[in-house]
Amino acid sequence: MNRQRALVTGGAGFLGSHLCDALLADGYSVIAVDNLLTGNLSNFDHLRNDSRFEFQQIDINQPFDCGAVDYVFHFACPASPVDYTVHGIATLRVGSIGTFHALDIARKYGAKYFVSSTSECYGDPLQHPQKETYWGNVNPIGPRSVYDESKRFTEAVTMAYHRYYKVDTRIVRIFNTYGPRMQLNDGRVIPNFMKQALRGEDLTVYGDGGQTRSFCYVSDEIEGFLRLSKSAEHFPVNIGNPTEFTILECAKRVLALTGSSSKIRYEALPPDDPKLRCPDITKARTLLGWEPKTDLETGLRLSLDYFRKAAQV
Ligand code: UDP
Image (cartoon, rainbow, N blue to C red; front, side):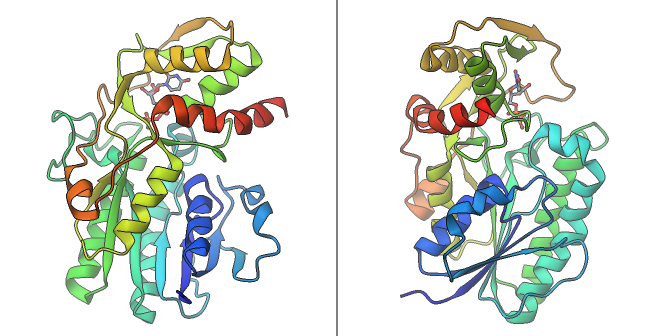
């Protein structure tokens, strides 16, 4: 029985809260911290009576200490393009100052450390699909740079703590992930399309909808995190679904699944929006024996009840 104590920063967020569930199921006791900038306490409703779970509202950009832990999972960061554009400075702070603080906790207690990075490190990629060895094509001063450069710095400081202080670190590069508990209004494509389809509003396709993304269902993604957390790999590992869709195809899938008669409306493409994105998951397959099991149609179906309820409020 695993009786270790894990700290999850950003624990009230979409991925953070699913990670808390998975760690509890794996036998950890969990302390989740979050400043609730984009996280939501309702993600913990089902954990109220679990004595192995604790939540503290903490802004990790201030020095903090919740006592000894065996594992630090650093997931605090606004993650949707709408959220990180609105909260640009907070995004840069948490990727830099907050990351130092999370790493300092791991160093102080000799804890293992796992950080959420992103496919945005590859920017608007010139290599396709993206391998971990690709250094990316990032605009350092564009509107997405508050997120992209924040996460690239997060990776740099994590590798530095590993190299200089021997902290036992892991870095996951997360590709587009979806499922229950995504905030309906966070602006990401799947919540937007689901909300619009379920409310009978036009689906807003940006640009001509020919840009691609590869969507991973949340339970597959979390399984990848757990496997990586138990591995000895210090360099970044892509975890995502390698099946690629155009955004227009994605809109059509959502319309078919929901049976909605909503129309498609084309709107301007946001600046620096990556044209292609698809993970090369050879490393995760060989190193972790991991690959996603849930295709887009199944994952959307599994998410439908959640989005239906959320869209009614
Ligand atoms: N997108 C869209 N309509 C929307 C929201 C997003 O066409 O209502 C597009 C967006 O321009 C991007 C893709 O869908 O090309 C994925 O956007 P998202 O915000 O989910 O995340 P990203 O992958 O860009 O970080």
